[in-house]
Image (cartoon, rainbow, N blue to C red):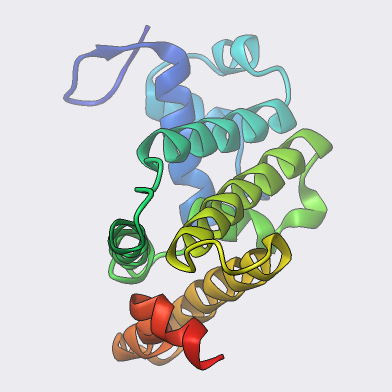
Length: 198
């Protein structure tokens, strides 16, 4: 088992993934190397290779865990429009708390910026993560519209919401003005009204 500085023993694979995720977010996928990961976890570099033979294996495992953890936290939206809107507002607030307010790029955004360096498995996990979010958002849109919108229309609205979130996070990071986030997502906090006006 690896032992983190000042901490207690943790499962080695989990510690490796923790260290790798931090490294990717802080310095990018290109700079990720097994020697630094091993030093942080407190194990030999060969032990990292034992669990993840290649950098691609490690990257895919990091993204897979990220997607699975997110999926577990993403509860099924309530079947009533009011409850679905509340769930969407929590989603918007969660994005702000975890990406915008922390003034950091998320793991998936960092990987997207270096997508040309990723292997197929990591790219597939990255795609699956965004498909998960789009599917959830599409379901929320359908519930809020009380089934009045077609599946295609719900998917378009879901794309619009996700694009607004990521665009807003870039604006905030570029300008240092956190108010841009709420300006970008305000209309999605009353989605039924937005769709009625469309």
